[in-house]
Length: 110
Image (cartoon, rainbow, N blue to C red; front, top):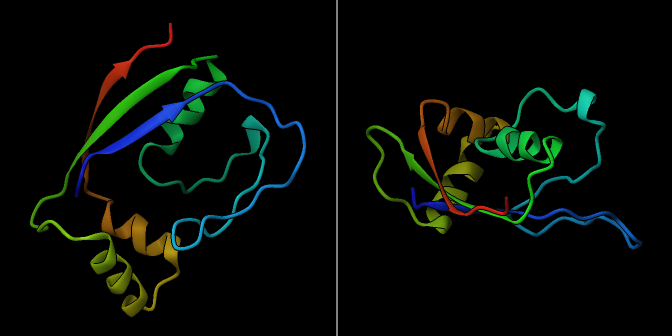
């Protein structure tokens, strides 16, 4: 799996509506911090924790290592997901359950 770059900025909604990104996102919604969904993919809980603690202007690189998995292209991962018969969230939770994630802060907004 390639490294993932995550960027966290402070923001507030001023209008419009949330919408999904095709092939990337199933659903988007706002949640109170004390009512977050239990199951979230790697890194999401950390970004939310950062937001709760007023971190912003931060950019991190998540280096992900998964034992016994070759490097897959995005197209190959999507094909495996679609063939699995699992709901998208469950597919990703299972696939990355044993991942070792190391975060490297590239820009610290402090």
